[in-house]
Image (cartoon, rainbow, N blue to C red; front, side, top):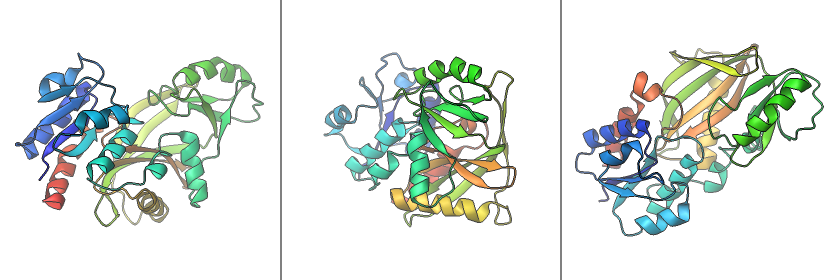
Length: 300
């Protein structure tokens, strides 16, 4: 049986991930990939491969003769797509890569929701010459850094001021504009089981607000019980099941973010795969240990 773990990117947060793997899989070897030879987690790994963690073709060549059980990452964004491709290559699961590739672009995620009759925030690509008629939110389409690339804009002067900054923080150099929806955000952590059902393990209300200059002020998360009695439960559960079903994700940790409007309508806002996202895992709920226990029971 394959037993070793492949980890993409060696940030400080990756050290926590490696520690937990060693606890639940003490016989496993840790293979770490990072283009930075001096990355924080290198000394905690058993084998280090110095290459770009988002170069799937090169990674396949590097790991072709290695005994690897699963690929994981503590990084968000497109690294989750690469991890999905690797796990499919390893035969760990069989995700629909075409669908998953939509998760990391704000525009493509909104389009995916539209095609599948799911509520979505109206999202469009935008250029610097834009006729601003009402308050909007501008973002990087494929973000490099979460939250720092998001601005509330209510006049043309602010739009022009932030446009180039937001563009520079986008991997594909595209900027999107979304309708501004007053309300709040929630984050759901969980994973998909072998039957394709998303198991919610933790729910949080995000404490976010827009500052006077238009940027986001993030003050943390507050856990809450996401029960069937919640106003949005059925609508959100429909989205979770649809996304997991369409993407054929199995045995994968997922972080879903929803925007909840003041009239209690829910909109899928963001998806992170594996352990991408905020520092909640280290600071509140040990989602990694929870997943590894589940994985050990499921795969043994």
